Image: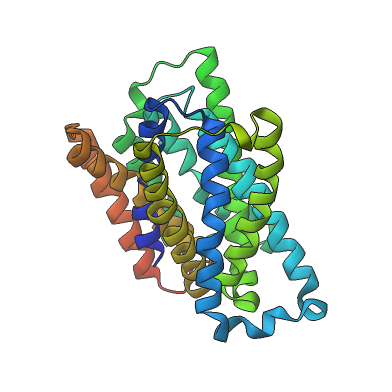
Length: 295
């Protein structure tokens, strides 16, 4: 599930770039995507209501609900806004490896909180996947300007919010259910964007073409609702550290999509990077449940 979610969400950047070319700002894309995705998550939560009925006891799960809402504001509102803004400043070859560096944050935070060292297979998988992401995106060839460094800082912030999401959602999805947790988080983010967008532009001023609405619909369904639900359920099943590393399949998926959709040729280094990422994921799977050494 995590792998499927990572592949689907890998198309987010391609949809965003297409919408930018149609004249939309990052405010437009981030806000409209977030608000219109809420009904989709509400539908999924209703379809899986049999698994989450106990979560509707507000008195019992008040802390969990508030934490889910806070995660939504941090990751789906602030993190998403930073990501879409950074894409207007820096190239994807710089954005991708920074964004998918969040497994490093996950492992480091987990190591500090639980005071236990990551096992050798986890370290190896982390090194392989990180090296693969860098090769696939070609970040080592990038010449960065001061403005691009600013964009990198925003992507690093987004990467950190994703790591926090993985760590916190692992327990929350166990108690609330993945679909209900994701609905609460996205609804919270949508509330943030409702106010944000009204201040910067005003919802009454939206004037988009049919092509823009269709592209937004594709972004919402295939690169927002479905992948985030799959990722949340995957975290619940396999844990935060394993899910974070498996999800680094995203950058290779982006490179392959770009080849078929835009005709961009894959270089030898990109092919080597895809191989490293796949090898890293396989090494993680071989480790099974032994993600960390006993203290």
